[in-house]
Image (cartoon, rainbow, N blue to C red):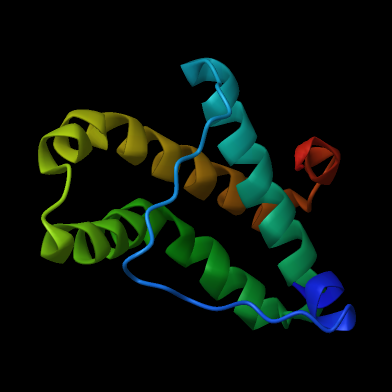
Length: 120
């Protein structure tokens, strides 16, 4: 993050670290949040894209759920920790990926709208 770097701090990656996220969302609220994140992301990104780039990203956005899920599987499976929990939660992970991709698609087509206000 630019703010962190501006303060002279550094981020380090520790693959052995386990992070617990304690914020609680209902499924509907979580999926809406993922949609807004995707739309805001695409809406900010289109400022740097050519028209062709925007068309290509828009066309490619339906592939995002597969890409996201493949990346998560690639990161989780080798660790062999909590695999049962992971596979039980995978339908929600897939829904979240679909929600993000839909938001990203809409962001490329229509811009960010008010979605960036929902991202915290």
